[in-house]
Length: 145
Ligand code: THU
Image 1 (tube, rainbow, N blue to C red):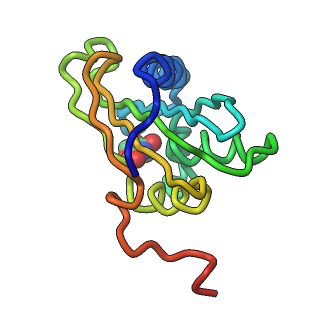
Image 2 (cartoon, protein in one colour):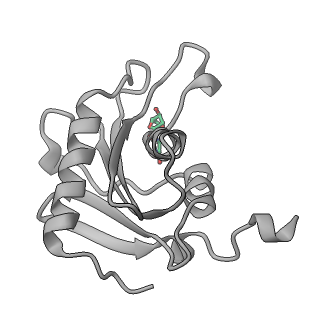
C-alpha cells in the first residue's frame, strides 16, 4: 500500500500520539508510549500504554487507541502513529518504537480494505512509514476461520 496521506495529516496524527503519550501510565517499565489512529471516516483516536501491578493486565498504546476507535463505532483504520521511549523528558534520544506482535495483529484486524499505514515517529519531523502488511506478512485473519 502506498502512503497517500498528506504530510499535514501525518504530522497531526503524530501530535495526537505525543498527547496520548503524555497520559501514559507506565510506572513499572518507565517506557511511555502514545499512539493515534486515523479512521476511514476521518476521526482520530489517541491512546497510551496503561500498565498494571499484575503485568499481563497492562495494555499497549496501539491496542488502546484501536479499541477506543472501534468502541466509538469506527469500522476501519487507515493509519496509526506511534511514539515512545524511556526518555519522556528528552524525546530526541528516543529511537523509533515499533508495534509489538500483538498490536500488529490488532491493527491488521481493523485495517481498511486499502490497508493501513504504520507511522513510527521520533517527532513530527522524524518518522518512518510502513504498511501493516509489511510488518505482519501472512497475517492470520477472519478469512481463515
Ligand atoms: N508497549 C506499547 O505500548 N506498545 C508497544 O508496541 C510496545 C510496548 C508498552 C507496553 C509496556 O507498558 C511498555 O511499553 C514496556 O513494554
